[in-house]
Length: 260
Image (spheres, helix red, strand yellow):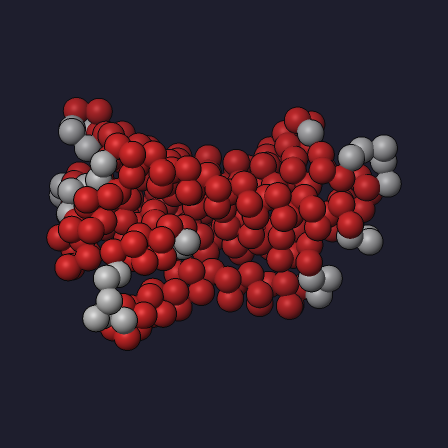
């Protein structure tokens, strides 16, 4: 698996798409630091962009890589190599290369701006870990959808629909549910519903870590009371890890039964 992971990782990290992805975050970070002229404000602005862009890019790259490398995958399948090894290696290679581009693109400008001399370094590392987990989650979802659909257009469409659901539609349904059932106690429902969406969970964790939970409105006190504690923080990271492992498990399970 390490050989396939290494090949996929270095193949992607040298591609123009990874270079463009890294350059995009470099320019974005320099622009935010220049416009805000403040590390805390730049981190907050970056958070709003990261939770939307990172899942979208992970989804698009995951689908593109799977369909574009299909012939190479079929060649590997003809060799005496376990399917689980092939797909897990490719998945980790794609997600790892995207995460490295993300870390370099965001990290270099902030380091040059004096990140180590500020008190924002913990919050910034927290932001990078959160963004990397979102990348692993949505690349796994993209691989799973692509394995399930032979048709490239259908696979791409379904993957984008999944991103749209978690990034936009889920919030609308959540707010409608709060309004419809406003007469009932909704504390537990709000917490569970948040943990069922990795994008919302990542956004709230970053908001609480940056100590700006007031932006969450009247539900902010509930989230602060639960996610702001050590146990809540631990449970949140376990939930995000589960969001990585469950789609990856489905991906491997589909790959074992798929007829190529």
